Length: 120
Image (cartoon, rainbow, N blue to C red; front, side):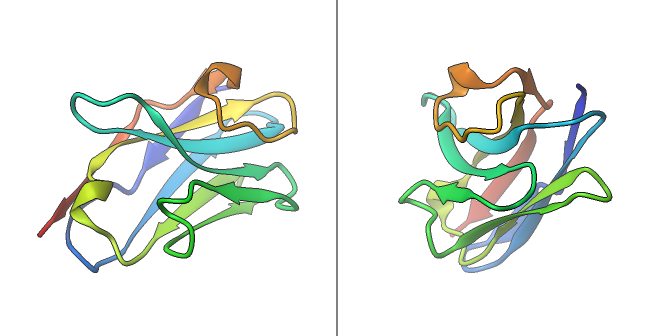
C-alpha cells in the first residue's frame, strides 16, 4: 500500500487546515502521527476503514476531526483552532489490522509526511 499525504502549510494560530491521505490499496485502520523537531513521533488520531471507530490524542481532542471517504480511499484530518505547539511534520500511516492503535510500531505503511507550521 502506498500513501500520499498532502494539505500541510503555514497558518496563523487559531486557523484551520485539512490534511489528506490517499491510499493505493485496502486499509484496516489509518492513523495520523506527528513529529516536531527534537521530539518523538506522537499519535494524533486514528480511524477504522469503515469510519465506525475514531480515537484522538488528548492534546487534539475537540479541535481535530478524522474522517474517511471510502469511495476515494482517502482519510482526512480537519485541524481547527490550531496552536503553535501543533507545528510538526504530520504523517499518515496504515495498519492492515482494523483494530485501532496509538503505537507507531503497529502500523505497516507510512506516507511521506507533510509540514504543518502554526505561527503565533
